[in-house]
Image (cartoon, rainbow, N blue to C red; front, side, top):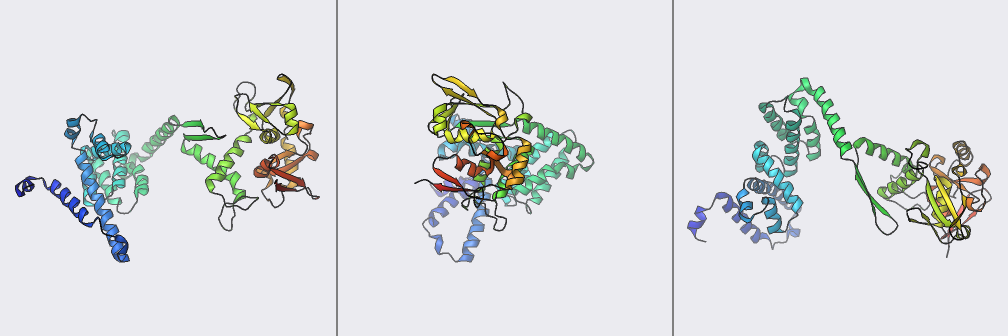
Amino acid sequence: MTDTDVDLQHPLLRFATAVSEALDRVSALEPAFLPAEQKRAALLTLAQDSERITALRVQLQGCAEEVADAVGARDVGDVLAHELHRDRRRMHRDQALAEALTLRWTRTASAWRQGRVNGEQAAVIADALDQLHAHARSWITHDQLIEAEEHLITEAANFDPHGLKVLGRRLFEVICPDQADEQEQLALQRAEADARAAARLKLMPMGDGSVRISGRVPDATARRLATLLDAHTAPRRDHLSGDVRDAATGERLPADRLRGQAFCTLVEHADPDKLPRHGQTATTLFVTMDFHKLRAGVGAGALLDGTPLSVGDVRRLACNAELIPAVLGGPSEVLDLGRASRLFQPPQRKALALRDLHCRAQGCTVPAPFCEAHHLHPWSTGGRTDLADGVLLCSFHHHRIHDDRYHHERAPDGSFRFHCRT
Protein backbone atom coordinates (compact mmCIF):
# COMPACT_ATOMS: atom_id res chain seq x y z
CA MET A 1 0.00 0.00 0.00
CA THR A 2 1.45 3.39 -1.05
CA ASP A 3 1.42 6.60 0.96
CA THR A 4 -1.12 7.96 -1.52
CA ASP A 5 -3.47 5.05 -0.82
CA VAL A 6 -3.16 5.69 2.91
CA ASP A 7 -3.90 9.40 2.44
CA LEU A 8 -7.09 8.51 0.55
CA GLN A 9 -8.35 6.29 3.37
CA HIS A 10 -11.09 7.50 5.67
CA PRO A 11 -9.73 8.47 9.13
CA LEU A 12 -11.85 5.72 10.69
CA LEU A 13 -10.14 3.04 8.57
CA ARG A 14 -6.70 4.54 9.28
CA PHE A 15 -7.54 4.42 13.00
CA ALA A 16 -8.65 0.78 12.79
CA THR A 17 -5.45 -0.13 10.94
CA ALA A 18 -3.30 1.71 13.50
CA VAL A 19 -5.03 -0.07 16.39
CA SER A 20 -4.47 -3.44 14.73
CA GLU A 21 -0.77 -2.67 14.19
CA ALA A 22 -0.41 -1.49 17.81
CA LEU A 23 -2.02 -4.71 19.04
CA ASP A 24 0.46 -6.71 16.98
CA ARG A 25 3.32 -4.92 18.71
CA VAL A 26 2.12 -5.68 22.24
CA SER A 27 0.53 -9.10 21.71
CA ALA A 28 3.71 -10.95 22.74
CA LEU A 29 4.21 -8.96 25.96
CA GLU A 30 3.62 -10.67 29.33
CA PRO A 31 1.30 -8.46 31.47
CA ALA A 32 1.87 -10.52 34.62
CA PHE A 33 5.09 -8.60 35.35
CA LEU A 34 3.45 -5.17 35.42
CA PRO A 35 3.50 -3.43 38.82
CA ALA A 36 0.09 -3.37 40.53
CA GLU A 37 -0.58 0.32 39.88
CA GLN A 38 0.29 0.00 36.20
CA LYS A 39 -1.93 -3.09 35.96
CA ARG A 40 -4.80 -1.08 37.39
CA ALA A 41 -4.20 1.84 35.03
CA ALA A 42 -3.88 -0.47 32.01
CA LEU A 43 -7.06 -2.38 32.96
CA LEU A 44 -9.15 0.76 33.28
CA THR A 45 -7.76 2.33 30.11
CA LEU A 46 -8.23 -0.83 28.03
CA ALA A 47 -11.76 -1.36 29.35
CA GLN A 48 -12.76 2.25 28.59
CA ASP A 49 -11.11 2.31 25.17
CA SER A 50 -12.54 -1.07 24.17
CA GLU A 51 -16.01 0.32 24.93
CA ARG A 52 -15.36 3.29 22.67
CA ILE A 53 -14.02 1.04 19.90
CA THR A 54 -17.12 -1.15 20.23
CA ALA A 55 -19.26 1.98 19.97
CA LEU A 56 -17.54 2.89 16.70
CA ARG A 57 -18.04 -0.62 15.37
CA VAL A 58 -21.74 -0.62 16.33
CA GLN A 59 -22.22 2.82 14.76
CA LEU A 60 -20.61 1.55 11.56
CA GLN A 61 -22.75 -1.59 11.71
CA GLY A 62 -25.89 0.56 11.81
CA CYS A 63 -25.11 2.30 8.51
CA ALA A 64 -23.52 -0.49 6.47
CA GLU A 65 -26.52 -2.05 4.76
CA GLU A 66 -24.61 -2.14 1.48
CA VAL A 67 -22.10 -4.56 3.06
CA ALA A 68 -24.92 -7.05 3.69
CA ASP A 69 -26.49 -6.37 0.28
CA ALA A 70 -23.21 -7.12 -1.47
CA VAL A 71 -23.18 -10.72 -0.22
CA GLY A 72 -26.95 -11.28 -0.02
CA ALA A 73 -26.99 -11.40 3.79
CA ARG A 74 -30.00 -10.48 5.89
CA ASP A 75 -28.07 -7.79 7.75
CA VAL A 76 -24.55 -6.85 8.82
CA GLY A 77 -24.92 -8.97 11.94
CA ASP A 78 -25.12 -12.06 9.74
CA VAL A 79 -22.01 -10.97 7.84
CA LEU A 80 -19.98 -10.51 11.04
CA ALA A 81 -21.23 -13.77 12.55
CA HIS A 82 -20.16 -15.66 9.43
CA GLU A 83 -16.84 -13.94 8.77
CA LEU A 84 -15.65 -13.84 12.39
CA HIS A 85 -17.32 -17.06 13.65
CA ARG A 86 -19.16 -15.06 16.28
CA ASP A 87 -22.36 -15.98 18.08
CA ARG A 88 -25.20 -15.15 15.68
CA ARG A 89 -27.65 -14.15 18.41
CA ARG A 90 -25.13 -11.74 19.93
CA MET A 91 -24.48 -10.18 16.53
CA HIS A 92 -28.22 -9.76 15.94
CA ARG A 93 -28.59 -8.03 19.31
CA ASP A 94 -25.77 -5.68 18.33
CA GLN A 95 -27.48 -5.08 14.99
CA ALA A 96 -30.77 -4.14 16.67
CA LEU A 97 -28.92 -1.79 19.05
CA ALA A 98 -26.98 -0.28 16.14
CA GLU A 99 -30.20 0.49 14.27
CA ALA A 100 -31.85 1.97 17.37
CA LEU A 101 -28.89 4.26 18.08
CA THR A 102 -28.42 5.24 14.43
CA LEU A 103 -32.07 5.93 13.63
CA ARG A 104 -33.54 7.15 16.93
CA TRP A 105 -31.20 7.72 19.86
CA THR A 106 -28.20 9.48 18.37
CA ARG A 107 -27.32 11.30 21.61
CA THR A 108 -26.84 7.97 23.35
CA ALA A 109 -24.65 6.77 20.44
CA SER A 110 -22.51 9.89 20.76
CA ALA A 111 -22.22 9.47 24.55
CA TRP A 112 -21.05 5.87 24.04
CA ARG A 113 -18.39 6.90 21.53
CA GLN A 114 -17.19 9.59 23.95
CA GLY A 115 -16.94 7.09 26.82
CA ARG A 116 -19.76 8.68 28.88
CA VAL A 117 -21.79 5.47 28.83
CA ASN A 118 -20.81 1.86 28.20
CA GLY A 119 -22.44 -0.63 25.85
CA GLU A 120 -24.68 -2.24 28.47
CA GLN A 121 -25.89 1.19 29.60
CA ALA A 122 -26.50 2.25 25.98
CA ALA A 123 -28.67 -0.85 25.42
CA VAL A 124 -30.66 -0.11 28.60
CA ILE A 125 -31.19 3.54 27.59
CA ALA A 126 -32.30 2.62 24.07
CA ASP A 127 -34.74 0.01 25.38
CA ALA A 128 -36.19 2.39 28.00
CA LEU A 129 -36.69 5.13 25.41
CA ASP A 130 -38.29 2.69 22.95
CA GLN A 131 -40.70 1.54 25.65
CA LEU A 132 -41.54 5.11 26.61
CA HIS A 133 -42.17 6.10 23.00
CA ALA A 134 -44.28 3.02 22.28
CA HIS A 135 -46.56 3.28 25.31
CA ALA A 136 -46.76 7.02 26.01
CA ARG A 137 -46.54 8.63 22.57
CA SER A 138 -49.94 10.31 23.03
CA TRP A 139 -48.71 12.14 26.14
CA ILE A 140 -45.18 13.21 25.31
CA THR A 141 -43.57 15.49 22.74
CA HIS A 142 -40.35 15.12 20.76
CA ASP A 143 -38.63 17.63 23.05
CA GLN A 144 -39.66 15.60 26.08
CA LEU A 145 -38.16 12.47 24.53
CA ILE A 146 -34.89 14.35 24.10
CA GLU A 147 -35.13 15.45 27.75
CA ALA A 148 -35.64 11.83 28.81
CA GLU A 149 -32.63 10.64 26.80
CA GLU A 150 -30.38 13.35 28.25
CA HIS A 151 -31.61 12.49 31.75
CA LEU A 152 -30.60 8.81 31.40
CA ILE A 153 -27.24 9.68 29.84
CA THR A 154 -26.48 11.97 32.77
CA GLU A 155 -27.53 9.35 35.34
CA ALA A 156 -25.33 6.74 33.67
CA ALA A 157 -22.42 8.35 35.51
CA ASN A 158 -24.04 7.26 38.80
CA PHE A 159 -25.77 3.95 38.08
CA ASP A 160 -24.85 0.54 36.67
CA PRO A 161 -27.07 -1.01 33.97
CA HIS A 162 -29.47 -2.54 36.52
CA GLY A 163 -29.91 0.74 38.38
CA LEU A 164 -30.30 2.57 35.10
CA LYS A 165 -33.03 0.12 34.04
CA VAL A 166 -34.94 0.90 37.24
CA LEU A 167 -34.67 4.62 36.46
CA GLY A 168 -35.81 3.93 32.91
CA ARG A 169 -39.07 2.51 34.20
CA ARG A 170 -39.74 5.81 35.99
CA LEU A 171 -38.96 8.07 33.03
CA PHE A 172 -42.54 9.19 32.50
CA GLU A 173 -42.92 10.70 35.97
CA VAL A 174 -39.71 12.69 35.39
CA ILE A 175 -40.90 14.34 32.20
CA CYS A 176 -44.71 14.24 32.76
CA PRO A 177 -45.27 14.26 36.54
CA ASP A 178 -48.95 15.33 36.24
CA GLN A 179 -49.92 12.22 34.27
CA ALA A 180 -47.52 9.85 36.02
CA ASP A 181 -50.08 8.05 38.20
CA GLU A 182 -52.36 7.23 35.29
CA GLN A 183 -49.46 6.10 33.14
CA GLU A 184 -48.02 3.96 35.95
CA GLN A 185 -51.35 2.17 36.39
CA LEU A 186 -51.56 1.46 32.67
CA ALA A 187 -47.93 0.32 32.60
CA LEU A 188 -48.48 -2.09 35.50
CA GLN A 189 -51.60 -3.53 33.92
CA ARG A 190 -49.76 -3.94 30.63
CA ALA A 191 -46.74 -5.56 32.31
CA GLU A 192 -48.94 -8.00 34.26
CA ALA A 193 -50.87 -8.97 31.13
CA ASP A 194 -47.65 -9.43 29.15
CA ALA A 195 -46.09 -11.52 31.93
CA ARG A 196 -49.12 -13.79 32.13
CA ALA A 197 -49.22 -14.15 28.33
CA ALA A 198 -45.52 -15.04 28.34
CA ALA A 199 -45.89 -17.72 31.07
CA ARG A 200 -44.36 -21.01 29.97
CA LEU A 201 -43.46 -24.33 31.61
CA LYS A 202 -41.57 -27.20 29.98
CA LEU A 203 -41.00 -30.70 31.37
CA MET A 204 -38.16 -32.51 29.62
CA PRO A 205 -37.49 -36.15 30.69
CA MET A 206 -33.73 -36.68 30.92
CA GLY A 207 -33.86 -40.49 30.71
CA ASP A 208 -32.06 -40.97 34.03
CA GLY A 209 -35.03 -40.86 36.39
CA SER A 210 -35.18 -37.08 36.47
CA VAL A 211 -37.00 -34.37 34.54
CA ARG A 212 -35.60 -30.94 33.68
CA ILE A 213 -38.11 -28.19 34.42
CA SER A 214 -37.73 -24.81 32.75
CA GLY A 215 -40.18 -21.98 32.40
CA ARG A 216 -41.14 -18.38 32.75
CA VAL A 217 -43.79 -17.05 35.14
CA PRO A 218 -44.95 -13.60 36.34
CA ASP A 219 -42.98 -11.90 39.11
CA ALA A 220 -45.78 -12.31 41.66
CA THR A 221 -46.00 -16.05 41.00
CA ALA A 222 -42.23 -16.45 41.28
CA ARG A 223 -42.15 -14.52 44.57
CA ARG A 224 -44.89 -16.71 45.99
CA LEU A 225 -43.08 -19.87 44.90
CA ALA A 226 -39.85 -18.57 46.47
CA THR A 227 -41.69 -17.93 49.74
CA LEU A 228 -43.16 -21.44 49.76
CA LEU A 229 -39.75 -22.98 49.03
CA ASP A 230 -38.09 -20.86 51.72
CA ALA A 231 -40.64 -22.18 54.20
CA HIS A 232 -39.33 -25.69 53.51
CA THR A 233 -35.63 -24.84 53.39
CA ALA A 234 -35.50 -22.45 56.37
CA PRO A 235 -35.22 -25.17 59.07
CA ARG A 236 -32.11 -26.50 57.35
CA ARG A 237 -30.26 -23.17 57.53
CA ASP A 238 -27.57 -22.60 60.12
CA HIS A 239 -28.56 -19.15 61.35
CA LEU A 240 -25.25 -18.58 63.10
CA SER A 241 -22.92 -19.25 60.18
CA GLY A 242 -25.23 -18.59 57.27
CA ASP A 243 -24.34 -21.97 55.75
CA VAL A 244 -27.00 -24.24 54.31
CA ARG A 245 -26.47 -27.76 55.65
CA ASP A 246 -28.19 -31.11 55.59
CA ALA A 247 -30.13 -31.58 58.83
CA ALA A 248 -28.90 -35.14 59.29
CA THR A 249 -25.31 -35.27 58.05
CA GLY A 250 -24.20 -31.67 58.48
CA GLU A 251 -23.09 -31.65 54.84
CA ARG A 252 -22.99 -28.17 53.34
CA LEU A 253 -25.53 -27.98 50.54
CA PRO A 254 -25.95 -25.31 47.85
CA ALA A 255 -29.14 -23.29 48.06
CA ASP A 256 -30.37 -24.41 44.62
CA ARG A 257 -30.15 -28.07 45.68
CA LEU A 258 -32.19 -27.35 48.79
CA ARG A 259 -34.78 -25.49 46.72
CA GLY A 260 -34.99 -28.48 44.38
CA GLN A 261 -35.64 -30.79 47.32
CA ALA A 262 -38.15 -28.30 48.73
CA PHE A 263 -39.95 -28.18 45.38
CA CYS A 264 -40.35 -31.97 45.45
CA THR A 265 -41.74 -31.76 48.98
CA LEU A 266 -44.10 -28.95 47.99
CA VAL A 267 -45.56 -30.93 45.10
CA GLU A 268 -45.94 -34.10 47.16
CA HIS A 269 -47.78 -32.21 49.92
CA ALA A 270 -50.14 -30.18 47.73
CA ASP A 271 -53.62 -30.24 49.25
CA PRO A 272 -55.81 -32.12 46.72
CA ASP A 273 -59.00 -30.59 48.16
CA LYS A 274 -57.85 -27.13 47.03
CA LEU A 275 -56.82 -28.02 43.49
CA PRO A 276 -58.91 -28.14 40.29
CA ARG A 277 -60.35 -31.57 39.59
CA HIS A 278 -59.75 -33.59 36.49
CA GLY A 279 -60.90 -37.12 35.87
CA GLN A 280 -61.67 -38.63 39.26
CA THR A 281 -59.75 -36.70 41.89
CA ALA A 282 -57.39 -33.77 41.77
CA THR A 283 -53.96 -35.32 42.28
CA THR A 284 -54.56 -39.04 42.54
CA LEU A 285 -51.73 -41.30 41.40
CA PHE A 286 -52.54 -44.90 40.53
CA VAL A 287 -49.60 -47.18 41.22
CA THR A 288 -49.58 -50.74 39.92
CA MET A 289 -47.41 -53.30 41.66
CA ASP A 290 -47.32 -57.01 42.35
CA PHE A 291 -48.64 -57.60 45.86
CA HIS A 292 -46.04 -60.19 46.86
CA LYS A 293 -43.16 -58.01 45.62
CA LEU A 294 -44.57 -55.08 47.55
CA ARG A 295 -44.65 -57.08 50.79
CA ALA A 296 -41.18 -58.46 50.16
CA GLY A 297 -39.80 -54.99 49.32
CA VAL A 298 -38.40 -56.02 45.93
CA GLY A 299 -39.13 -55.11 42.34
CA ALA A 300 -40.72 -51.88 41.19
CA GLY A 301 -44.09 -50.24 40.73
CA ALA A 302 -45.29 -48.06 37.91
CA LEU A 303 -47.67 -45.17 37.33
CA LEU A 304 -50.35 -45.49 34.69
CA ASP A 305 -48.16 -43.63 32.18
CA GLY A 306 -45.42 -46.22 32.66
CA THR A 307 -43.14 -44.14 34.92
CA PRO A 308 -41.30 -46.65 37.17
CA LEU A 309 -41.17 -46.25 40.95
CA SER A 310 -39.01 -48.09 43.46
CA VAL A 311 -40.66 -49.98 46.30
CA GLY A 312 -39.30 -47.35 48.69
CA ASP A 313 -40.92 -44.53 46.75
CA VAL A 314 -44.24 -46.39 46.59
CA ARG A 315 -44.23 -46.84 50.36
CA ARG A 316 -43.15 -43.26 51.02
CA LEU A 317 -45.79 -41.77 48.71
CA ALA A 318 -48.36 -43.99 50.34
CA CYS A 319 -47.64 -42.22 53.62
CA ASN A 320 -48.34 -38.67 52.41
CA ALA A 321 -49.59 -38.50 48.81
CA GLU A 322 -53.10 -38.76 47.40
CA LEU A 323 -52.12 -42.12 45.98
CA ILE A 324 -54.26 -45.15 45.13
CA PRO A 325 -52.15 -48.32 45.08
CA ALA A 326 -53.62 -50.74 42.60
CA VAL A 327 -52.05 -53.90 44.05
CA LEU A 328 -52.07 -56.67 41.45
CA GLY A 329 -51.97 -60.43 41.82
CA GLY A 330 -51.92 -63.18 39.21
CA PRO A 331 -52.63 -61.93 35.67
CA SER A 332 -53.03 -58.25 36.64
CA GLU A 333 -56.06 -58.98 38.83
CA VAL A 334 -56.89 -56.05 41.13
CA LEU A 335 -56.79 -57.37 44.70
CA ASP A 336 -57.22 -54.11 46.62
CA LEU A 337 -57.64 -50.37 46.01
CA GLY A 338 -56.36 -48.32 48.91
CA ARG A 339 -58.44 -45.28 49.95
CA ALA A 340 -57.28 -41.73 50.57
CA SER A 341 -58.62 -42.07 54.14
CA ARG A 342 -55.48 -44.03 55.03
CA LEU A 343 -53.65 -40.67 54.98
CA PHE A 344 -53.15 -38.97 58.32
CA GLN A 345 -55.85 -36.34 58.68
CA PRO A 346 -55.26 -32.74 59.89
CA PRO A 347 -56.37 -33.42 63.51
CA GLN A 348 -54.03 -36.41 63.63
CA ARG A 349 -51.18 -34.32 62.20
CA LYS A 350 -51.73 -31.77 64.96
CA ALA A 351 -51.64 -34.49 67.59
CA LEU A 352 -48.44 -35.95 66.10
CA ALA A 353 -46.87 -32.47 66.11
CA LEU A 354 -47.75 -31.96 69.78
CA ARG A 355 -46.35 -35.37 70.65
CA ASP A 356 -43.19 -35.53 68.50
CA LEU A 357 -42.36 -31.78 68.18
CA HIS A 358 -39.78 -32.50 65.44
CA CYS A 359 -38.34 -35.23 63.22
CA ARG A 360 -37.83 -38.39 65.28
CA ALA A 361 -34.52 -39.35 63.65
CA GLN A 362 -31.74 -39.09 66.18
CA GLY A 363 -29.90 -35.78 65.92
CA CYS A 364 -32.46 -34.21 63.58
CA THR A 365 -34.31 -31.10 64.74
CA VAL A 366 -36.43 -30.22 61.69
CA PRO A 367 -39.66 -28.83 63.27
CA ALA A 368 -42.95 -30.72 63.07
CA PRO A 369 -44.60 -28.40 60.48
CA PHE A 370 -41.89 -29.38 57.99
CA CYS A 371 -42.12 -33.13 58.65
CA GLU A 372 -44.11 -35.95 57.06
CA ALA A 373 -46.27 -38.55 58.81
CA HIS A 374 -44.85 -42.07 58.45
CA HIS A 375 -46.64 -45.37 59.15
CA LEU A 376 -44.60 -47.50 61.55
CA HIS A 377 -46.50 -50.54 60.31
CA PRO A 378 -46.68 -50.22 56.48
CA TRP A 379 -50.15 -50.03 54.98
CA SER A 380 -49.12 -52.83 52.61
CA THR A 381 -48.96 -55.25 55.55
CA GLY A 382 -52.11 -54.06 57.32
CA GLY A 383 -50.90 -50.89 59.04
CA ARG A 384 -53.45 -48.50 60.48
CA THR A 385 -53.65 -44.73 60.22
CA ASP A 386 -53.74 -43.86 63.90
CA LEU A 387 -51.50 -42.08 66.37
CA ALA A 388 -49.97 -45.25 67.75
CA ASP A 389 -48.88 -46.27 64.27
CA GLY A 390 -47.60 -42.84 63.18
CA VAL A 391 -44.37 -40.91 63.64
CA LEU A 392 -43.01 -37.65 62.22
CA LEU A 393 -39.96 -37.73 59.95
CA CYS A 394 -38.42 -34.95 57.86
CA SER A 395 -38.33 -35.47 54.11
CA PHE A 396 -34.67 -36.58 54.19
CA HIS A 397 -35.24 -39.28 56.83
CA HIS A 398 -38.57 -40.33 55.33
CA HIS A 399 -36.63 -41.16 52.17
CA ARG A 400 -34.00 -43.01 54.20
CA ILE A 401 -36.53 -45.15 56.09
CA HIS A 402 -37.89 -46.42 52.78
CA ASP A 403 -34.43 -46.83 51.25
CA ASP A 404 -33.19 -50.45 51.20
CA ARG A 405 -29.61 -49.22 51.38
CA TYR A 406 -30.20 -48.20 55.01
CA HIS A 407 -31.05 -50.19 58.09
CA HIS A 408 -33.04 -48.43 60.78
CA GLU A 409 -33.91 -49.33 64.33
CA ARG A 410 -36.00 -47.67 66.99
CA ALA A 411 -34.43 -46.59 70.27
CA PRO A 412 -36.23 -46.94 73.64
CA ASP A 413 -37.17 -43.24 73.54
CA GLY A 414 -38.97 -43.72 70.21
CA SER A 415 -36.33 -42.10 68.01
CA PHE A 416 -34.75 -43.78 64.99
CA ARG A 417 -31.15 -44.69 64.28
CA PHE A 418 -29.98 -45.22 60.71
CA HIS A 419 -27.03 -47.27 59.44
CA CYS A 420 -25.87 -47.68 55.88
CA ARG A 421 -25.88 -51.37 54.98
CA THR A 422 -22.53 -52.89 54.06
